[in-house]
Length: 291
Image (cartoon, rainbow, N blue to C red; front, side, top):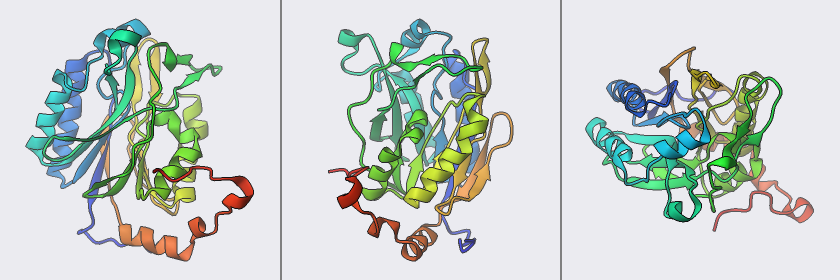
């Protein structure tokens, strides 16, 4: 259904792909270079992947390297957003929350900064990835991380209304449906997908979330080898509301660009009004709208 406008006046977003390591300073330098490139290319919003701050070798190192939202690292990104004059989706910050002293665990926190560097939303990952898949390193996120308590309402940005999620959340359509019914036009799944699940599930899940919600889907991803124990699939992409992949990163660190056409989104929703056809009387209110 290729009716999307090609107007250069449409908002441009940049999707950044990186290979985080335990070196936080070097990770910031890499991300900052990509954000500055996105600004030079005219993007109004840049998306960074889950664990943009670091990927540690074990839970103890993860906890040691973590910071509160008011710490030095977020301060650097606040300055970067102001310097570049664009919004930043920081797709998964290892956050020491207010309950750090009691729990000694962190949150996987998706932070949205506006172009003035202010935090306009912070979503803490609600579905933690505790899986053992043959051929892929075990993942036990709950060893060091607390599940978030709530879903964040979509946020108005220069590109459209954004619904915040993180990686493993994409396997739960109830979340995407709730965000769409609350007004989301863009769903975000910053990720660090593995090399077994990646080829099998990554693209098909992202396209499914786009099709069923009639939203754009933006998925910034980690790629390559982070250290001896961890490797990520990459393949960052943007999917339009018809389910077409409209932008995709090549192998290795870098970025891809996409224009967000909300008139196309609204036209598609008029042609195919699935949300008007839902039957909660038969199967309940899956993805109940946010209050």
